[in-house]
Length: 132
Image 1 (cartoon, rainbow, N blue to C red):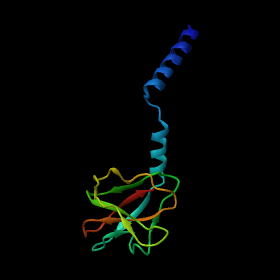
Image 2 (image 1 turned 60 degrees about the horizontal axis):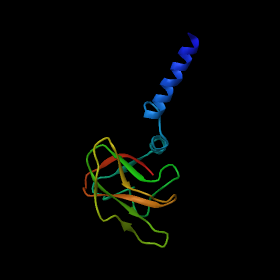
Image 3 (image 1 turned 120 degrees about the horizontal axis):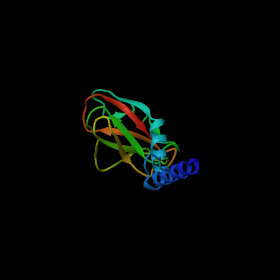
Image 4 (image 1 turned 120 degrees about the vertical axis):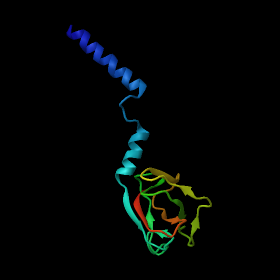
């Protein structure tokens, strides 16, 4: 009887692994690791950018994430503006609409150590978290 129970447990485990049920994939673990290292941001009233003082102040991407992600408390249109090492500023052409309390990918495939800020389409204050 014990052999049958051990064999049955092995079959159930194998089926779970094959179907992906209850098992974190590498992609899931990477995204979770990225969000686990999220940092807060604040955008103040009548400022277009976060962090405050951008481009004199900026955020920097890390090896925790391959993308730039944002979590806003309210729906917002946002762009990422990059600060190239040769100087100047380059912002995305299109706005990305965020959903309240949901992570939104704003830029993909960004190299570690990239300096950036968020540009918002509204003057109102908002805060949240970013992971990059």
